Length: 202
Image (cartoon, rainbow, N blue to C red; front, side):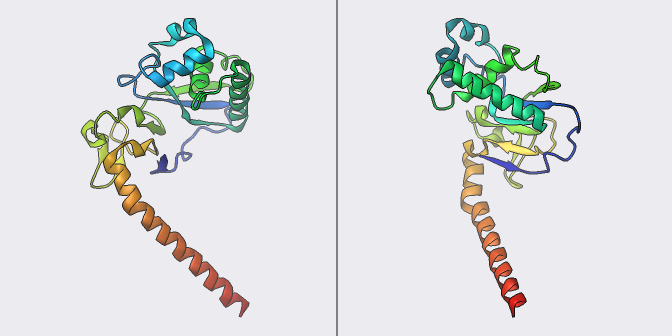
């Protein structure tokens, strides 16, 4: 449910000894306690007290995370540990773990995560769109239906559009037009490659 519009790795800082990027959902549209799913993931995993403490916190999307290898490895181990400790069996519960790890500060003291940055929705490399499906993306002003492009709030092209399929217009365009075009291009390249190999053999 993501597509790249520009190279998301182009201007990333390098050699930071453990840089980790998280990306939020729209804080005006949703909060951890406002969303039924997010609320249940937190409640079932950590209990009522933790839910009350996090109820008004902005939701951070577990489906979009970037970082240097050492930081990503540490983050993934932490996620697995939360799964083991809570023993929760709910589809999507990783989002509860993701938010708990950030708001509890569990990742802050890690020697292999030098810096953890949370980007607000529409202000970073990955633009999380799912919480804005309450109306068409074009009505929010960040989607151009003529160019089929998604933008950050400052008007720049979002390097990565995440959860694009929540919008009817964008979903229809990619499903009925773009995917078919990519398939034809891919098959054409395959045929071209096969012909080239055959020519080489002759």
